[in-house]
Amino acid sequence: MSERFKITLKIAGKVYPNIEIDRSKEERYRRAERELNTVVDLYRKRFRAEDDEYLAMAALQMALNCVELELRGNLDSETEQLRQLEQQMDDYLNEI
Image 1 (cartoon, rainbow, N blue to C red):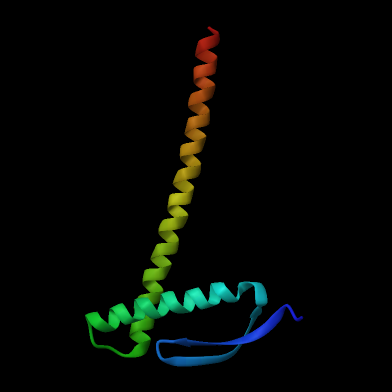
Image 2 (image 1 turned 60 degrees about the horizontal axis):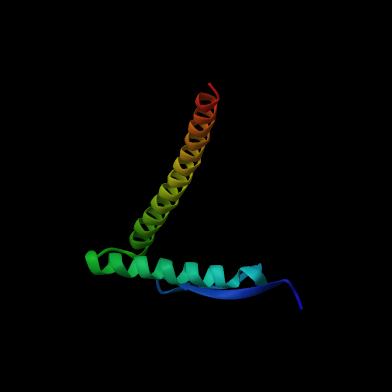
C-alpha cells in the first residue's frame, strides 16, 4: 500500500483534483477543507463579494488564529519559566 495518494478537495465551490498527500494526513486535509469552507460560508452570509475575497478574508482569519495560538504557546513557556524561577527563589530562601 502506497504511503502517498491523490485526493480531491472542494474549497469555496472550486474543485482541486489530484492533490498528492501522505495517506496518514488525509483526515487533516479533510478537516482543513471543512473548516475553510465554514469560514468562507460565514463571510458569504456577511457581505457580497467575489470568491477570492472570501478566501482572502478566511485566510486572514485562520492566520490570525495561528498567530494567537503561537503567542499563547510562547506565553505558556514564559509562565513556566517564571514558575521555575519562583521555585528556585523559594528553595533558596528556605535554606537561609
